[in-house]
Length: 244
Length: 244
DNA sequence: GGACCAAATTGGTCAGACCAAATATAGGGC
DNA sequence: GCCCTATATTTGGTCTGACCAATTTGGTCC
Image 1 (cartoon, rainbow over the protein chains, first blue to last red):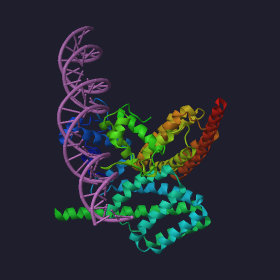
Image 2 (image 1 turned 90 degrees about the horizontal axis):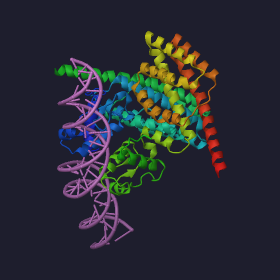
Image 3 (image 1 turned 30 degrees about the vertical axis):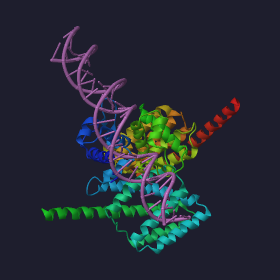
Image 4 (image 1 turned 180 degrees about the vertical axis):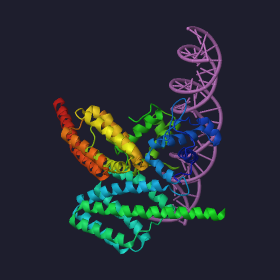
């Protein structure tokens, strides 16, 4: 979880999940600090630090007189990770929304990067593409190289807004998916096609082409991930059934 | 500023700005809580709550033994607002990056909304468009109606990820720009064109068309805002000169 | 110069106290 | 009975002073 192993973080994690699970309705009064400190058998200071975190997440709003729960819709980006981790199986809809968002942001980054790259940076990118192509048959081995490639793109595009969003999103999403051991089943052919198209776009300095290629790739990824999730969910259901 | 009028928020605001102004280099040791509490003449508890906020922002990382400053590149989205508000005049590059990001996210939202809207929602959207067209000569009056229109789109598209990002971005950016009294100089003709195109896309249920229209609009907006900022900056410089 | 150990520093937590703002409650006027 | 007001209570914000454990620091010894 996101917890440091401090008491205040632990408390914050528990309360956060309770809010995300809709245990309090938006607008409800939140338990008082003194009540919480007895409930968790902790000092009020520790509870206060936990509440401070929840406030930063946009989940509660504190005021002298009492704290109130806020709508998840008005929360901060940082709640998405915990929201995904809430159940044993991720919400397919939410995962799809993640990927769609990644898609448009990454496409934009790639477009700007290809258009703005210096000659040296272009050769660096080509180098990384070759690296990727050399490992295109081992998805595991591609992972870190993809990361490196996209990181280079992000550095070249140099858009702080997108970078911060992507930081958050990646931290929330990618790690979650990794932890659950998701392996979207992408056809090798489609990956090869992506790599060659990206190579062409680099040679021609055609950001638009690179952008389209990424969009295509994410479309396929969305389908594949959707299948993977449904598959896992089905298996989970049948396991439950066999136990019962 | 983003401060509640509590001491801990005040301290957090000051320290946040100091970090954003690069007063500490990334990796540096951050002053100890006891030092800070004497500096701000506040209790250690108040300082701790301030540091907790900075940690949530991703600006520092605390550990027994000492806190350390982190790179702004690895911070949370929520630093963008303070980053914009840092100087008297916003960084044109950052503003442009904001708009570009808004552009892709809004375009995506609009596309999905148009494609997914129910008949009732379609008529609602058309209604809002008519409202907008009726006030297309008064930019001030359009503002809240734009907000309403995009809010409706966002509700229909129903993508939580984008919604949370937009929440953050809007809270950080739009309000900042409003406060500074920015009025990007958009030609009435181009707005009318946008509105009619959106109307057509609604009738045809053509999300792609709506998306393209929004992209175009944001392109023009970026140019207009860029001009407005440069104009303001120039005037500011000349004022400084005349004083000196 | 480098490895190792003790002392000082630092973050994390606790307890008990006070204030001011917001809320809940009781009372009085209609 | 209903509404409004004044009072009492609850609640968040802050302070003080203390203790523990982990880290850092500085010096010592080889």
